[in-house]
Amino acid sequence: MCGIVGYVGSRKVSDLLLEGLFRLEYRGYDSAGIAVHDGGAISLRKRAGRVQELARLVDEQPVEGGVGIGHTRWATHGSVTDANSHPHVGGNGEVVLVHNGVIENHDTLRDHLQSRGYVFQTETDTEVVAHLVAHHLDERVKLGDDPGETETYVRAVEITLTELKGTYGVVALFRDLPETIVTARLGSPLVVGVGEEEYFVASDASPLVGYTDRVHYLSDHELVVLTPEKMDVRHRDNGRVRPSLQTLDQVADDTDLGEFEHYMLKEIFEQPKALENAIRGRLDEDAATARLGGLNMTPRQLRRIDRIVLTACGTSWHAGLVGEYVIEEFARIPVEVEYASELRYRNSPLSENTMTFAITQSGETADTLAAMRELQRKGHPALAICNVVGSTIAREADGGVYLRAGSEIGVASTKAFTSQVMILNLLALHLGRTRHLSFPSGERFMRRLRELPEKVEQALACHEQVKEVAARYHAFDNYLYLGRLYNFPVALEGALKLKEISYVHAEGYPAAEMKHGPIALVDERTPSVFVIPKGGIQPKVMSNLEEVKARGGPVIAIACEGDERVAEIADETIFVPYVEEHLQPIVTSIPLQLLAYHVALLRGCNVDRPRNLAKSVTVE
Ligand code: G6P
Image (cartoon, rainbow, N blue to C red; front, side, top):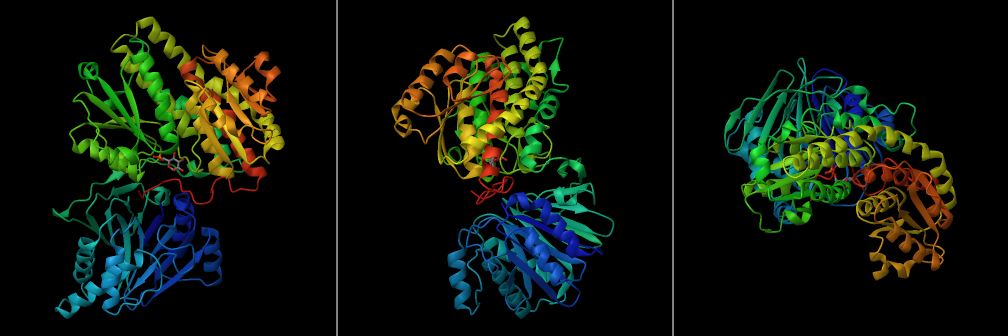
């Protein structure tokens, strides 16, 4: 969470920082701020609220200069106020910095600094870091270090970092070192962009797009000193290291809203294209299997796998549940799906031939990253199913598969979910074909995958109907989402979408399990959304639907086109095209995404920036 941007060069830095913060706003939008060095002094502008508020403030009170840092905050320590907004000032203004992450020992450090006379203006853990750098700077100078020398400042930052427990991505400006910024990382992502006599630093590459495509991703324990002429990379253990420059392949118009009012709606409608991208070049007609070269495993190694662990958070975890069903059905390999936040601290026994995957849209989720590292530490190759190219998880994984879904900006994940389910289907096919799945079955599987983007296009035709349903139901405050087998994760995901963006309470449940508790919630004010497409289990789900109707609960059904039986019983029926059961989550989740979207709009919620959430959760 939290977005960081910094710049050294000769552009008008306030414009550049604001533009960067707008692009990073998906990481947190409680407050925003910038600090700009004009060669003599550092000016600060910060304000609670969205980046737009900050832009207004900068408009009223402009700041000049070519060196600066900016931050958009997702509050962890300290409430959402102007004062708690970053950047934070250390000492008597000799250090100004922004931070992403959590300093776990901030209390002890604060006591220590207060006893030395440092006065705190905020409730944040970050202010501790700022004062600590100022303190060490002061100490260095007392010990005889030259206050005009960059090394004095670097040393002060290095000593500070050794005293911090927790995670940080930090960028600092110094009052008496006008042309320099120092940045360092442990656990929170940072990337440096290399321009012509200018450098950029940011939490991810989005603020760099359109300015440079040459980047260096910081590793943990790296510290980088940037001046307009030079980039100096040092590692805590290895001293000075050469930057490992990579080429960025993001394009600027990825973030354009186009004809859509919100990113979420745009991304829902991008799903046919995203799914096409997910399978492009990955279907091997001759061998009737999926081509997944990024797994970096030979057929012999794949054949030996006796267990799969999928780990993820949020929506990606729901995709993992679909993965469990499809891999077990087609590849006959036992699969477990673990919340990354649990897995990272558990000591679960893993056989030598366990294959592990981290599933993540952003590639930056702190818990998923930690779980992946824990698996790797135990000697298991950890693969990734990831969307963001160059993200930390993508870089650290031992292999994997990219979603190719394009930028997902709306906080509520939509196209990443369906793309993840698509990739997990490809994986099931690939693993299945090393085992029991015959050539003709592989061919049938591939045919269904190829047809899917078109089916999703057809499913999107329910948009107008969903809008009408939302108009009738948006005032209800409690919902149940029910489905079975492949559509149980869809029920969980549908409920999560509604909760996330409309702040309406919704519970996802296996349709039959609701008899063991949630059925007590059913009344005329609690709609149940049944995901009930055609398939072997449908008669059973039908009985569950009848049970809800018998108790006076309104029912919204997601059913297959032409399924009049469901339509007769349900109060509202939204039709989607029929696809095979293992692919149904991709189609049945479409109306649920649209339902959440329209309910949220009608309730006056900010669809793309829901309260308290962030797109990329980089704290644990
Ligand atoms: C946040 C987002 C969710 C996302 C989850 C996991 O909570 O709001 O949409 O599913 O993080 O993110 P990841 O990037 O790892 O898939």
